[in-house]
Length: 352
Image 1 (cartoon, helix red, strand yellow):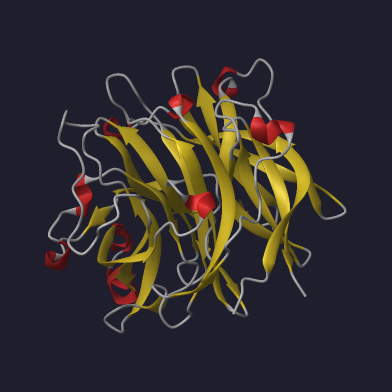
Image 2: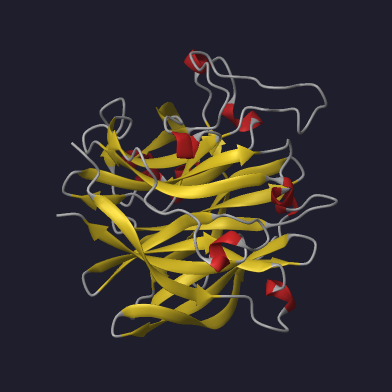
């Protein structure tokens, strides 16, 4: 099996609005969804001075079904909670939204940039406009890993759109995520703490599960994840530093299509992206319907690399960072961050 999908650039759909301080440091890495009336929306990360991020709402303008721009409708999530702010930082960052029909809800995973760095969190909405926080994600203790996943910074979290078989056989909601094992950012000299059985220090893609029955008992249980499994590590040159999941997995005939990013270059310690000399490209994985921890195939070469001026020059140069995928008139479009400054769109094409 190969991965018969590629991305074809369509254009730039959103750049910072002149004079809008909330966007003065960039608009990037959007989530997406359809409102009850069928309109397509982006939920972009808006970056204000001081690297303070909020989640906005912007209706996608279409021209013959093709995304060409946006109409802004304000901010829907800001770092208003204490755990989303530190003394010298704040942010609700990089939202990913999955519409889960069984719940009748849009499920947003996002990064709360709080006192202990980036931690994953969850909010839900019926209409994309009004969001209810369910709080920080909690990773149940798993003795076989010989560690507590809650200790570690974590990013690139996104739910599958429908229940999948869990490792214990129970129908479960599944969420991809990417723990980072270096705790030196928090305690000088602490260094890397790897889970049992993991020998590669690079951040990779993991999956955790919540049984459907637990969520039926109470929506708040959606934040309590268990059965943590490693799905994929860096394998190819365009992924040399790390990989992370992008948009919500898409059901295709071959399996679950996961568009991911791969990073190469030099990455100093810490979370300041402007100090990095890296390149972000997009690749793709196919996961099994029966076992989402099983990679059926993956792209050896990237399907999108930084080439245009908007992708090469920005807050962090040489970045394409896919985070959302939506269908318009039978065509799938992938929205992605461009150099941490603007938002582009590419068409997902299936190779014949």
